[in-house]
Amino acid sequence: MILLRTEFGEQEGSKDGQTYIRTDQLDGEKDWKPRKAPALTQDLAGWRDLCGDVQICAKVEAPQMSIYKFLGRLSLRKLGEDSDVKSEALGLENTLWANTVVTHGPVYGLVVYTGVDSRTVMSYDDNATDDKTCLLDKQVDFCAKVCFAILIGLSFMLVLCRGLRGQWWIFLLR
Image (cartoon, rainbow, N blue to C red; front, side, top):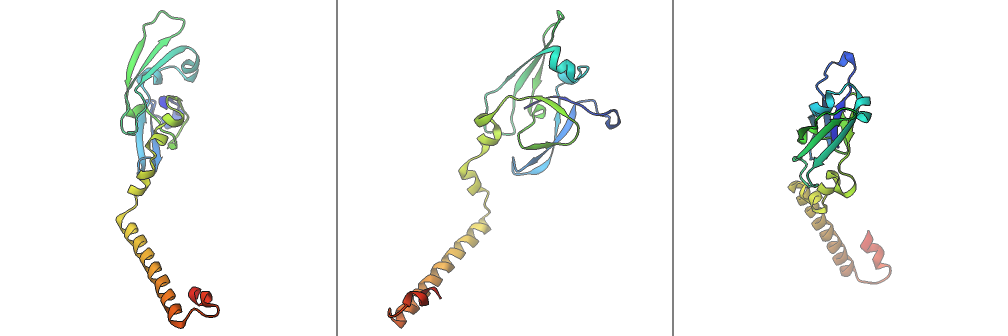
């Protein structure tokens, strides 16, 4: 989603369109990232101007798996006036991702990627979850499987030494 405008109360100050988002497990980190609304839309009088008195066109790159790159251009023309079309370049700092938390105040945005085109879905890969398992966890899992196999093997050998008579399967499971 492209961040178009932030609304802050008078006591909160900041009219520059900056906010922060908290990413939880989207990129493997849990931290606060700064985001900023384009000056074209942040400088409008209010959200009513944003929703009714302007024509906005966003041209963005095709969806890609990288969550650290974004390129686009935002064009704005005020309706009812013979004004020129103003445009501004868009970058990663102008985006909000799915499954993130905005720090404060309402924000207004333009959704550009949905469904399978969203970065959350595109960056998900079955192999990626295996790669994030640390080596120690893999070694402990392997050792547990080996110990289980040895235990089953020894149990079976002890039952064979006793003989396969009577209820031998109960002795195997003991």
